[in-house]
Image (cartoon, rainbow, N blue to C red; front, side, top):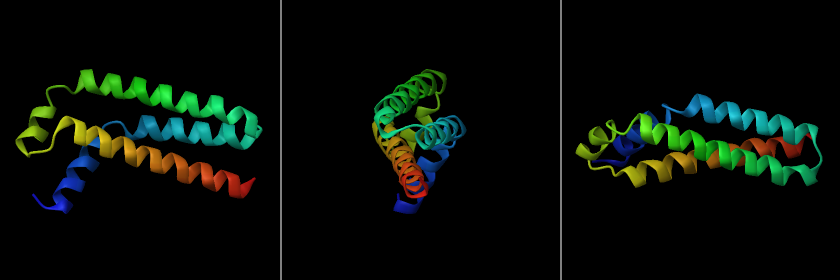
Length: 102
């Protein structure tokens, strides 16, 4: 399988929970913009905990969908690592933009 197909599969998997994680990211960005730097630790923990809850929900809700990805030789761990890495990069970029705006 080529890299482009792999990234497309990860994007398909990530699109299942992108709206929820993006909404949490935007809320965290807004809270970071409104608060001082000392509150950022709480906001980052909020992001990590809610992302974990979303991942837990998706993991139980879509457990039969993993067979599709396994048939295409993409493991469950690899899907989660790449999807959560993309989510983390998006979060860091938004926080970086917030810092530049502040």
